[in-house]
Length: 348
Image (cartoon, rainbow, N blue to C red; front, side):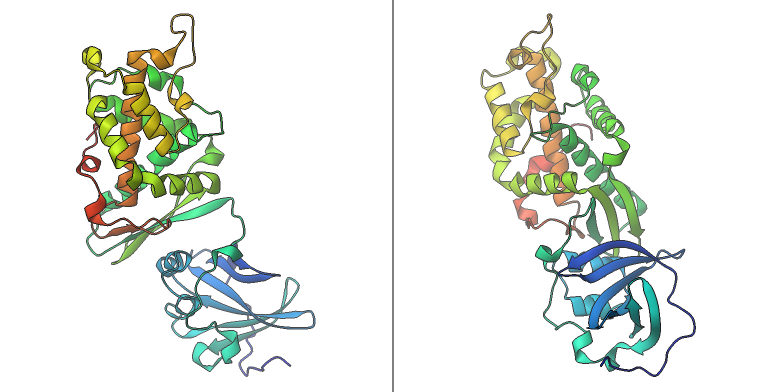
């Protein structure tokens, strides 16, 4: 028998819009909802089953705690209780029909309805999502410009990753490879061009900004792109020396092309390999005027400048600023690990 509750509601639940299943094993375990039209976050956890009737716990939570839960920083118990004001709903559902709804106090629920205190998110129970939240925790020292900068850097690295990801046969827009990279403006223009040329269904979008103290910025990235960016970030620290070698000549002005070292293409290939960049994606296609772009000094310098700019932007995503934490990747890097070159972009 299911546990009985005294306060059955005449009205149904708040109007909720289903977002995604967070955990699944032989059925849904934990599901994310949005309040409509409030946009508040609600969570639904499976509790028990009797015949065709499933019992669910529905509570209100907050986006920061959900992001921390998905990153393994807090337990499911904290996720369900810390922002719920101690209250929630028990819902008995037969298929898609709510048979009964009860208002409950969480501390009075049977122990079996709530998770163990040490239970945290299990990524093996996470279904495949078309898009994946990318979350930045922001401390008390923030302003609107900070949120805009964080978003811009992630959009830029995801755009470069979209065009340069190995195995996709994609290439950066050809017009970018013809820019005169004398100074920082063409670099900034190139990354904007890449962002503008991504198909709409493959673009990263803003999900929520909660500018409280502390706050959070959530972006929604296509899962393929989010996973690629995460894989690159995991390799970033290991490629510091490769970057320094490339950076020593990628700073050259086009007029000084004769100073490009003989090892330049090999230096570029080493860093591309380390950062999971398809080197073909950053060179123009051969033409009668340029039959072998990879042996052309100007093309090598242009490619080097783009990869160097991508490298610095990756650091700005991984370590945006003191007091800001990107928690959607497992890579943990200390401030002391960030090389000084990562603080100087050519277009800044």
